[in-house]
Image (cartoon, rainbow, N blue to C red; front, side, top):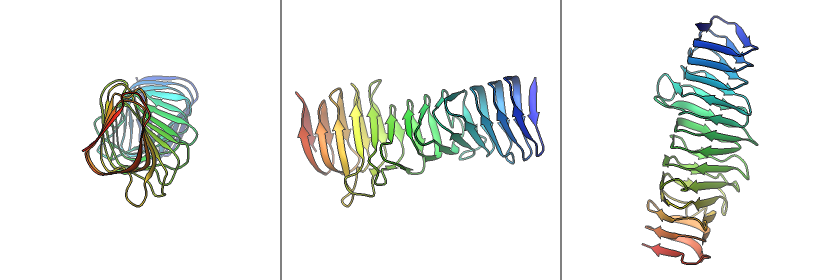
Length: 274
């Protein structure tokens, strides 16, 4: 069976929907107040948006319009643009994406909500991340544009190899590199726009390798902390500027210049200034 919404209509599905194919064309919008279980969902380029207020199980392709997910809900299925840098995903609160986002073609943007947590269980590929609240990347994240923090006390957790630049933008927030499951390689610069702001935490039993500039001579980060459970850390791509580097566990290798106060606060910890 199939479901189609055409023309300028605004369609509201009050109950659960089960279908093989769901297609949206025209200039209207659609809202699902119940669950959606489908094989494929296709959203045409002139359609306004599709809002899901309950859980979704489907493969979704957008030709440009926004896919919106209500707080506390999840999408179990890949989300793709029909071409690279096409379509957007908007999380209206806490949300879980169980499959890849930008699986074949990257999205144009992903927007997360303030005072909430967005969790991506599989890979993410997008041009822009409009970052509010907290974000957890359990798999690879590849983001073209610089990711800017927008408030104090935000956190971003990276648990797999990822590539993007980030800027604390003067906010007292935190990036956590978690190598609990496996070695983690992060490729990107991490900067700020106000001196002594921004915290990086490296944790987990494996190695974290950061390739990129950390801070700069004008605006240094506040703290880089190597947690007690860390296996090891390597800073191999650029200079490191921070007010303090605290090493509570593992060892740290710095391949380039380091401008920071370094504290060795654990048994058997070490630092190599290459």
